Image (cartoon, rainbow, N blue to C red):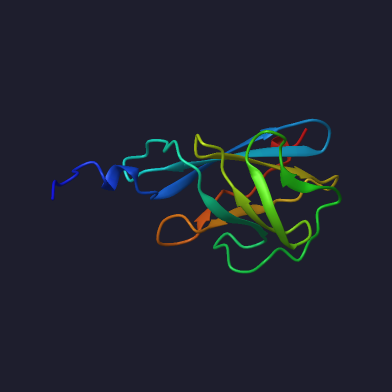
Length: 133
């Protein structure tokens, strides 16, 4: 059987998080699945996405966003809601990308967390006011 030396490069090792201000009171956080060398992986991945109050990602946020928390249109898919406005079962695009749209008039400092990629949950930095439109 032939050995594929590149097989590890295609295994998901983590997620990058890029928050950006969307429309009024909206933060759009782009999640990109990466390999162990930090390169994007172009493949579909099922992920659990949740919001936490903790910098360690332990537990769901106690704060509920004032508006929708869901995938931005054509930037992945939400397969199911585990807890409204706090916890989603989702899927990336074929590019390994998912964009989470959070509408919140309080511009809460949520930590976006992803389970299902790599050995531990992946965590964003806490969102800041500038990450919201």
